Image: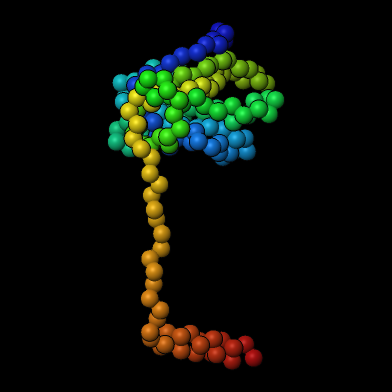
Length: 164
């Protein structure tokens, strides 16, 4: 296994399911996570950073992550900038576009080997504003027909009688 510790820029990808404003912990360790989408002709290039999978719309995707804290317990946020390299605090909506800086290193544990890709920074060149979808229950009108309540009480009485 060649020592491949290096920093790279992945250019012109789409961003989906950005979890960079606050860490998530799907497997117990808090991480930042973002899905990078790209067309089929870039599969070979992207295989160096992860395992591409097909997603809706004929595109392919990989996820890039970063631990939310280092070994000393210090927070390690992802640097996010706009196309002019100004810091950004905006939430990144699905379909936004940009570039990603990643760091890669080779690892070996118990005879297994691989390459780890870590998210370092994002440059958003085309921001699609993230808006939370408001999904809520409808307000239901109170039932005006007491027949359903009567039938339910009849069933309860029948069950009660059958038990004794």
